[in-house]
Length: 341
Image (cartoon, rainbow, N blue to C red; front, top):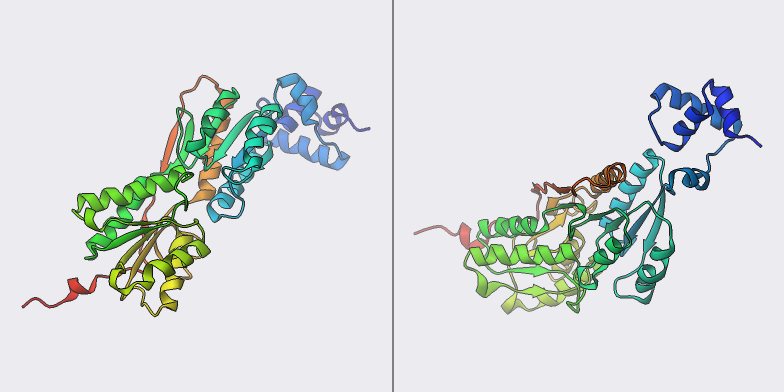
């Protein structure tokens, strides 16, 4: 059986250097690392993470906790996390289950408590269930993505500011009757980010003196959810809003499809704006606030690596910018275009 000594001999280095090069523990010059990796590959040698863990006390495995694999945001963050962990020679252990489910509770009560992990990245944690507090109690470094950091390092856009800017964009176009679409249907398990976006919408409406027009139509945060809720909201001609802020792009696109099927012209009769800059946003010419979840996943890994290198380092908070992307689903309200006598 090929051992580390064989790899070291082939690469012309000491066994200790070969071990550092393959496990990532300690400095090794890039050229030397490449030579060792090439030798290991040629000999068919794979470093044992469990053996390295006996020496370092680490498993070189990071746990990732998230509520969904199907929503675009979570999938993009996960891809960024995996990309960065592979670069750092770390394994990924994924734990995903819907909020407020028996499987989700078992994840926290059993699986996460018994699994040996060097650190945890929490994506879209639900504050109402005190999940981040539970993760912190496991005494491992924790980085959250999507807000709700509780003294941990965290990466997100400023969700509240993004929704405020989106709403102010519609107000600036002369819209007054503006509705907010999306968010947990029963209101008990709204994610932290979604809650902040609703608050940002309310902030903008209040500051513009439009409290009388504030309304929130809840729906499942998905394209079908936005379609169903949008169809119900827009079917009433007498109380139809002229502007919609989607909690995310999927919901906004669903509402656009509903509007078009009802014969409502977007943006002539209805202006719609989303948040995220989803892959579908360009196809639907959706005006939106942009975020880059893949980059957030990479940044979360970088923050976690710093904590592993220096456990006493102060937590860091990264707020990514969310610039507005102007496309074709928002336009001036008809009343603002009327000629002045």
